[in-house]
Length: 629
Image 1 (cartoon, rainbow, N blue to C red):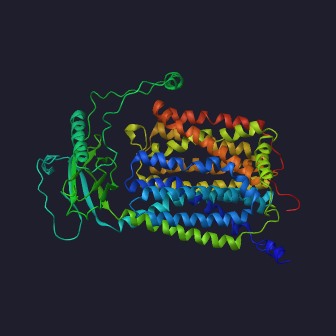
Image 2: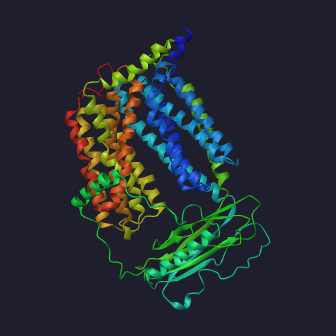
């Protein structure tokens, strides 16, 4: 009787009490492993080569999670796995925080990121299976928009709020921030002439606390254009100075001595053939005539420390534009490392004026050297407390579905047989070939667009982009984009629950694909209006939220029957594969044909996914509210 009563506990609670929090908790560790780890390691001075190599491997648990998804089906309940893995995620986050200050922090934190990745992937399996067991078919259709929206909230929390939190702590700890006002002026008399590279240095330690010292708190740069070869020579001299004095990591160093290898068979026969095909269709990029092109004038800022830091310690200074005219751009010296050996060797930062800028203008630049390890320690401890709350909350709030029962103990042979059956039954489903093709191709256009959209918005106009600042990009996706993405997801869930997936899947496919055309407009017109850019991105995000509902419902539809959790995990693996492979080549295609033609290519690649809908074996009643409900 006690066990029966416990099973009824939470039955009367609305899914609103647990679906949003469950999928918010599902998204946070994924974004921590895949995005925040990269940002943290970069801020802590790890080379780009090591970051790319080791953090890319962290994606592996999500790719192979179908291989251990039967364990979630065969042992204990999915409710148990949800609470248990949330506790493991919290423990992994705490261990990362505690190992950041250690001397071998990279190896140690990476080991705990692996724990986090496997725990998170297992949590995904359990949560997705529990969603199908804890909700009726109609409720699944209704809440599919809610779950995807709160998962996206988690992604934005990780990419936005958590990074902002670390940045806030960093900016309010460590050395005091130094601001430099840069002006573009039109009169020679306002320019103070000096050598970019100091001939001799005799910098002595200053009294007081350790601080950043600059040559001046203001810089005036003449708007007169200069010869590009002269500018290129100056930039190379400054890069050599910064590198020789130990201020740079791997970024900015010349790759001398790199051995030139002959092209492989794959490059000669496959890559070149694909390049010729694209160039035959879209034509080669127009080569710009640079013989008469003028370069914008440059100015220099020199920074060093007031005295040596403690032995064995290093001070990392990041220099960037905070506000003002984006035609005034930092082109060298945005990152510097100071130690007890080079504290009095200035880092030289170069700021360039756009040659098109002729009127008086200005921008504000800042040099920051906060306590980077402390900022990430506190951020990870905050996430640790968050997951402790999630585990406790879901322990009490999650319902006890009748079907969510632990399996009886089985022999190892029967376990292997059951394990194999999960895959065999999935691939024996009627029309599985067409369904897998749909999973891979439905977002073929979106998988390429998502990799290039942000670089396009950030790239300067001369490179074919829109020249937004990082803050503007965050506003576009974090406010307007997020609101319309949410609205699209909720509307998609509502109409699918009312009329069923089959009636709306065509419209949803059009909604997720056709609005990609706004980027064709943006690439060809390159509007200066921030309002127009927000409207275009908002339209695309609304369409994505509405159209992605069909994809999520279709994955649920495929997973019906025995082994729901395991089969849903297999569909998510195909979903990841469908995003990963096209995304890998999207940058190469864009650089080959340029932004305008790339976005046309994206729109063309949406066609196969739409055409495949005609061949899908869909039940017309799937997703509709039943008479009993």
